[in-house]
Structure formats: structure tokens, C-alpha cells
Length: 179
Image (spheres, rainbow, N blue to C red):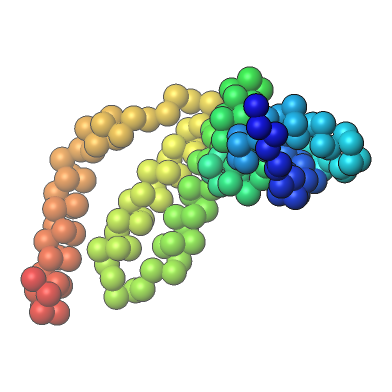
């Protein structure tokens, strides 16, 4: 069998970055045992192991796992296995905090809505009213109101008032030349 000579410069560079012997072997097509022997014979300095706490934090704060894998020495499959094994999850805001943020965001949107846009003002006002009602019920510990229940609970007088308001808005549009 012919004795092959390998250029271990790239292997040494990858090892110093923290790649394992197997990872280097897969990239360069050299047996892991040969890389390990070369590393031991020449006192290669290994790179740092992955900071799993940092990687998990990046994922839980919303960074895509594919992006994390491409920017680190950890492979995508290794990240996915660790994510499953340790039950990594995204940080999500639920419950009252989510409702409070929705109300706040809608209030900010309403405050910045141009006065000459009644349709947008009406839409945001309606959404704000519904979110505020849900928040109020949740803070009191009451069951949330489902959207269908809210719609069916509107009495005829409110329907007539809403229809009249819609007709007025549509008429304003036509007057402004928008059809």
C-alpha cells in the first residue's frame, strides 16, 4: 500500500477553531486517527468547546437555528439534537403581559393615526376596544370573550349606528374623489 502524504495545515487550523477530529476528517477526507496522531505529535492547541449556554440563549431570543449553526463550529444536527434533549424554546409573552402589550401597541397606533383617515382610526379603535375589553376581563379573572360571542352580542341599535357610520365614511370617500 502506498504511503500518502497529507497537508495538515488546514486540519490544524480547524482544530484550533474547535472542530473535532471527526468534523475535520469529514471536511478534509483524512482519517480521524491520522489527524489525532498529528495533533498529539505536534502539540496542537485545541479551540474552545462550544458555549452551550450562549447558543441556547441566542436560540431562545429568536435567532434561527440554521443561522446559529452557520456562525459556529456546531453542526445543525448537533444543535437540533441538543435543542430537543434540553427542551429549548423561544421566549414568548403570553397571558396578561401579551394583552397589555397589545393594548399599548394599539393605543400608540391610534395616537399616531392621521386625523383625516377615519377608516384607519375606526379599525384601530375597534381593535383597541376589543383588546381592552379582553384585558379587563382577564385582570378580573373572568373567562375571555370569544370573537363570535362579541359579534353576536351587538344589539340592533348598535348595528344601525355602525351601518350609519359606515355610510357616512363611504360618502366622505366619494366626496374626496376616492371610490
